Length: 134
View (cartoon, rainbow, N blue to C red):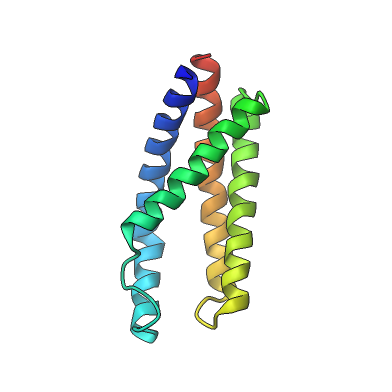
């Protein structure tokens, strides 16, 4: 339990720091533009509680998945994190593209790349911490 808690905490810090950079460089400007184009459909800034809960759920699944699969090398953690996060957000973004005219494939591509990089780095940190604290 100790290694899962520490892995979660370190993963949370990693995802928060890198996610904040991505938010300021891409997501916040993108959502501000979408808000201007569709003010009744898109919030200017994402609602923080649901976004935070979504990130926590994704992180819990990744930490538990790595533990159950016994992934504790940085390389394997990075690969699993990248594949898991990239595919998760690809599915979510494809759903948004299919249901709305607000999101497009340009947004999808950038979001999936950012999510994959975030998962790669976060997965490496989680795998490293699970090995160190097991």
